[in-house]
Image 1 (cartoon, one colour):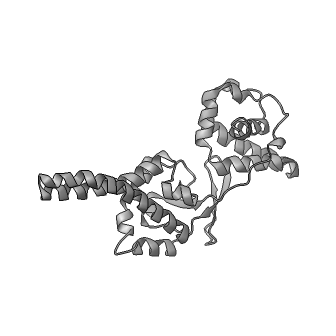
Image 2 (cartoon, one colour):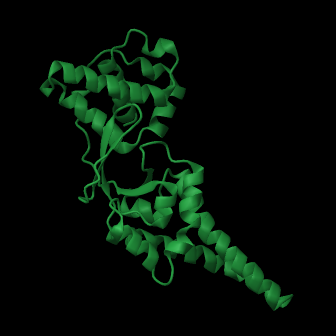
Image 3 (cartoon, one colour):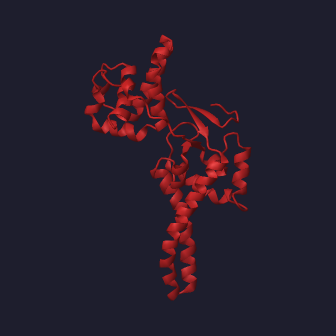
Length: 255
């Protein structure tokens, strides 16, 4: 893994496939945080009306319930959205940011929960001073919550649309007959991984023969681990053709 402070991160998965990510800048993260704060504030303004009715019964009870309710909302928002949307909140989606595991593994619920629960420590004493200093001093721009959960926040810039003509008119795609396999691929393959595979196919003739075989073997192994396809799906299919089939169902068939 490249640890030079260049805001560029090269991550290698356990299957041996390397992907390059751009670390999110403090400005982008601040923008995402501001949007998320507005989202939480809008939701709280609705709930506050309900809690205000409790004041008719007891002001103390209403205050306690409101305090606990706001804590659960602010913490639950980040945990729920980052878990359901694979490392993104509303703010992160708008700013094209994503939380990822620092080792290249799939993000776990425990990591999502830990980095959000520790957000109040990063916010101390005011204006995220602790978290900001930690991010500035960290080689990979990690706040304390990220360091504890072993996570990173990366920026996913908009990618140009692939040239689908490079994938059409080839052999029969055996994946198309297995909807569950296609669904697992579309859920488990990140956009940058799909883009990297498509780029490898387009540039395949530029690789030396040995490097080409190794590259598509790594890519095929990675995608097979995600697809969990039955043996008959990949039987007799070369690694390069399997990668082509995966890219086809990710891009061409969907479009």
